[in-house]
Length: 562
Image (cartoon, rainbow, N blue to C red; front, side, top):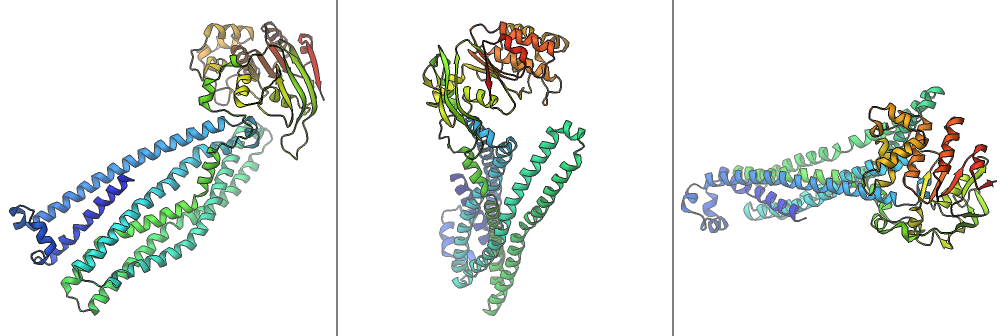
């Protein structure tokens, strides 16, 4: 704020110097008759007084040069502050998302979350914060220039004050007119934002399902969907792109009307040609800065009104509405150690009920289950019976609608610290495996990423051999340091599953949960992998969801979920 205030003072001072400069040019004798300027001259060297015209010309030039240098500095500082703020907000929102419970991601599209971070925050800085700063700056300048114009007109040029007050009347009419336009502009902005999100969704879905799109020949479907959205976006953008020009046109029109009005009134009042030219010159000098300020204020106000919804989006993304205490912030994560939660005896699921929404079908109803430490449990059941939901409940990713999950008589959802400590004991191999666009070694040592520890290459090599990945690694030019492509196209589905299994065992967790971990493997390889899982069991508790009957012979118990 202080930076903009000082910039305003320099701006007003530079424009104020134009008035005496005009007087020099049009009325050289004015200085000798002006009491204020005589008092100023008393403090100046005699040589300056004798060459007053040269002095003021040089002074005006120096002040304007300093003003432009300072303006560049202010712009650089402001840009640096805003870009840093943008980065901090993006990081804060991303961290807030990561701290949300797993159920949050089941209810929200990933594409929309990406838009909220990458696009909405950038737009918030550019189309909300930046205009707010601009309006504050320009208001400072307008107030200062209005005071300057009032002083110059009434004291220096002896113009009646009612004449000066005509300017705000014109401005008020413009504001009222623009207010009507901005309402429609705001509505168009909201629709445009919605269309951008929708178009991004169709593009993302089209690319992510490219195999199915080509095999089912659905190119026309996605193109048609995108075209419909883009047609709507085009209509809104036509209005959004044209409206910003209206304030400038209206202000220029107002300026011309005011100039001719001033001339007519001054001629009617029988002012001399010199005085008329002096007043017009001073008015033009101030207007040269006032009208761009008005234009910036109206444009900025228009941007703020159009993009006000971005403030609501940012607030929703930053607020802490986690009533179930299932999330925990990064600072707390670092303080939690798995030793705080000792798993010694059993996991008990007591009368568990679960449904994703209050009005949806119950996935699990009245489930009771006991899993002893170091057991090898197999969960069998038809598709949709709730097996994946059950392992999500056991791992604490979702909370039961009714009932409790107790580990050694301790409720894992008692508070966020206990939940996090429990999850530190778990490794998980999901059905839909995600691998980083990083090296194979980093994907296997995924659990070390937050601690920034160097991967244990010896342990990785053992797991690579155990889970039949050595042939793949040896065939790659960079071995373990081979980068997995973004869409995981340089390894097969079965290899991807084995990397995920190796990742689960690398963490050396007490509990390993696997959801259909071998469904992409051929029968022979699947038998070997299950055998290796059993061999690496040691003192671990293993819970496997599967349809494979061959797994049953390795299990201590088989639980049928109906």
